[in-house]
Amino acid sequence: MTTKSFSIITLLLFFSAVFSSALPPVFGDEYAGKTQRDELTRVFISPQRIVWKSNDILVKDEENLLLPGNSQAEMSRTNTCFMRTSGNDTASVLLDYGKELHGGLQLVMGGSTRREPSLVRIRFGESVGECFSETSNSGWKVGFSTDDHAKRDIVMEIPRDGLIEIGNTGFRFVRIDLLQNNTTIHIKEARAILRYRDIPYLGSFKSSDERLNQIWLTGAYTVHLNMQEFLWDGIKRDRIVWLGDMHPEMAAIYTVFGANEVVPNSLDLAVKQFPLPGWMNKISTYSLWYLIIQHEWFLVTGNYDYLKKHRDYMVGLINQIDEAVNENGEIKVEGMVFLDWPSTPNKNGVNSGAHALMVWALQDAQKIFHAINEKEAFLKSEIILSRLKKNIPSHFNLKQAAALKSIAGILNPKTASDEAILIGGAENFTTFYGYYMLEALAMAGKYDDAMDIISQYWGGMLDLGATTFWEDFNLEWAKNSARLDELTPEGKNDIHGDFGAYCYPGYRHSFCHGWAAGPTAWMSKHILGVKVLEPGFKKIKIEPYLGDLDWVEGTFPTPHGVIKVKHKKSPSGEITSEINVPQGVEVVK
Image (cartoon, rainbow, N blue to C red; front, side, top):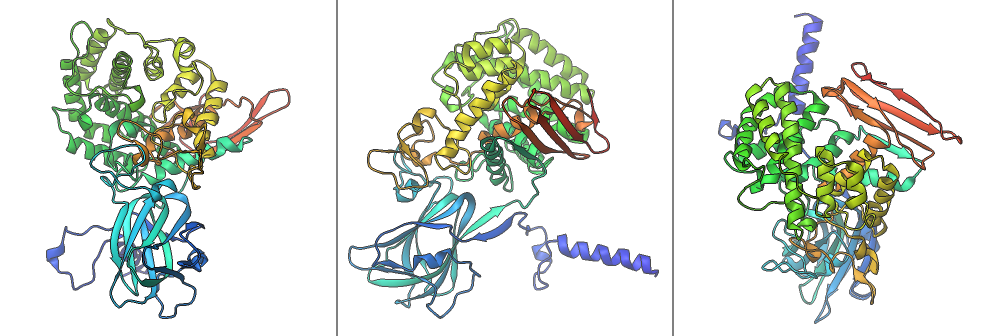
């Protein structure tokens, strides 16, 4: 054997050992196919601050919990947090980990006055208020929390020594109550377990406006946390692959992380979970989002094979859509017609938006079928479109509908902006459909308005202590509300517990929802100016808009490598640009 051959074999064996999920040799063949390596990374994070404790007598030395840990219990009771419950007085402490996290809690114990385990109550919260809340799982209501998607209010016994890991949810805060009466425990460590994909942030955005920079990064982190085994809507709830939610998430993902596998894996899962005939997530509009996602993912990846893998499902879906549209262009489907929650009272507007969404989806489907030479489905899509265009409804003063109609090309974007989207500015924006409102504003050339709304609306969540963006937000909520990271003073509203509606009243409201990440994609596309023209980034256009910004710079991942862009505005308003693209990417002037 040559030295070169030996080196190659050695390397192959090394990589096989590193990347295989081999078990210790005591596990025989009967375990084959029954194990799975955890593809996500776990990191332990010490609390950043103590928010509150019940009193100075029952809880002492709590600052020791802020120290670095090593997950090792010690027989010594030095450098521990002392907690004692006696009579009706319960020892409690509230910890802040500084950022929204997905995962759980690791308690490392330092002894107890009991030989037996001790009873504690652990409450995870996305806000301080949630850690003080009671659950109402049988009826969702303002002022209460729920545990129906992730257990976040847990009463359990913990050991005297050793360690225990608790919970799997979305949270920033943890409250620990010692329920065991006449008992003292010593907690050495109370570290959060962050469970996430350890992947590089290939995309970036920096400008002369630090608020916009923070919004971009917060959107990126919001969707990053939701990139678990599959792409979730929220890390506290629902922890499900929802196809509508997935579109703005996907846009943020390819902007920040490139073509991450979580997107196609989640599409594959959705097809298995919701076979035809039927609608994705049992919602007709979510099947339309499936087509839009497929086209946009193809545009940024150039992956023809993946389109062909889903050919049969997409063709079958077009046949199903054909049956749902009558000769007068009216859509007749069973079940719920859904855009987003805040739009639901305006039924005419929702139906109008669904009509526009179908036009958009069919236009994207035609591009897909052209790419894979599926002529019959292409023609059928054209026939359905011709029927839909016989009956183009009004936007009914619904911002969501007006935005979709602009994107679908059936309403002038300037008209949509003036008649609906800009009425009241950021009022009645939503975290999900706000992305499409921003897109419509860009199509109308109203970039300054869009940037102001991003700063006011998404920045409004930051002003209230958010480290990730929320399932919903209304500017009215902020007027007399305390921040989420503080105890709510008397006379102030609790921004978490006192608001919310529909399926997210009170503390059930998700404060890390991927569909809210749209501004991250929007800013890279329209401010940094990176726009893909041909599948796989073969051709792009760089069209920045700086508005009041003095400069902006950033990166954008492609299948060929990372695009690097810098734009600087002179005192006269002239913009000079530095553009560096990888081989295989052509910049069209």
